Image 1 (cartoon, rainbow, N blue to C red):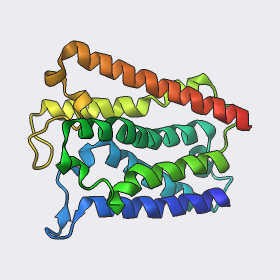
Image 2: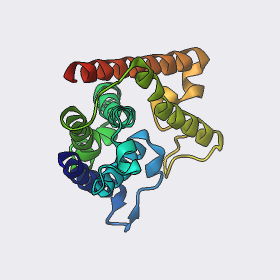
Image 3: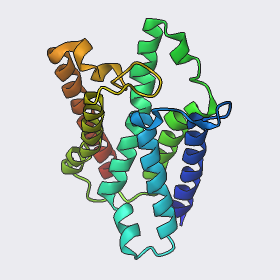
Length: 214
């Protein structure tokens, strides 16, 4: 019961956060290029996941609910959104401060921004800790979850190959550590390898926590 209630509550918070972040009231339209960024796609992914989890919870023995709440799926969704917070708080914010990019930093305390980068990730981690099934998690689950960031990586790089800038900007790459022409091959693959290694280590940490809690 609590898992279902938490799922519906998280869905509401995530939906409000995405709406506040994406909608431009003065122009009465959505922000151009909004769903190119991992932050927004991961929040959208969580929104769909939590909505279906909450809606299917009326039948705990149903196949959909059992699959969505299975240990491997639950930890993958949790990691998917938690890295949104980690990359934003410990990579992107410090990088913007070093550059003195006030235009990028200006909206970091808006409600929508706090939702997608802090509230939703925090609530999903709390949901996982308190109510999700964590039995039987292995290192294999820590490896399998990497399919999600790898899928985004493929999407971002293929989209950049089209030569179409993101929204109204002149950027082809959504994040500085994906900007292959600027970084060069050596630094680019060093960043990608380092990030994937960190994601795998984070997955192993969550597997360890799950084993300890069970």
